[in-house]
Length: 171
Image (cartoon, rainbow, N blue to C red):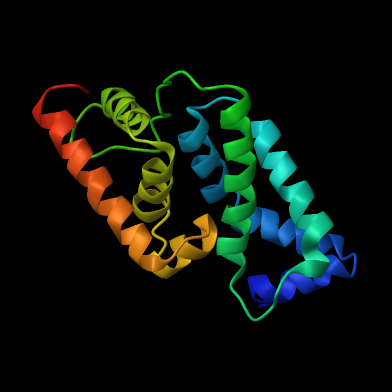
């Protein structure tokens, strides 16, 4: 089975089956990332635009690096642009996205969306990438374009802010 990185090389050579395989591999993770970032708005448009950019820029992909951080970096850039154009209202997260500790799924999703909305954009980005997509500090640093120490600092401050919000009953 070809790696993601090999598939991107095939995409650059015009292989449609490689595009379909990459789409299949990221059919859940990528839309969930976009959903969390935008609060559920324009997910399909941003998803399609991300894959369009992947195909268009596939020849420029550095095969010595991992594909998933590159993919999420493209999606993050599009989400940031979207966010600058139209600030999203808080939306409930679909039931299959979050279901922590026996809390009703719809309530937990709404609480998580509210809490994420409290964070400044740089902190929200690292929280989503770390806890929803299980990227390492180094991978997150590659996606958001900052040093790993900055990622750690953003995570620390985000978690402190979320803990304070929960303690004060904000969410």
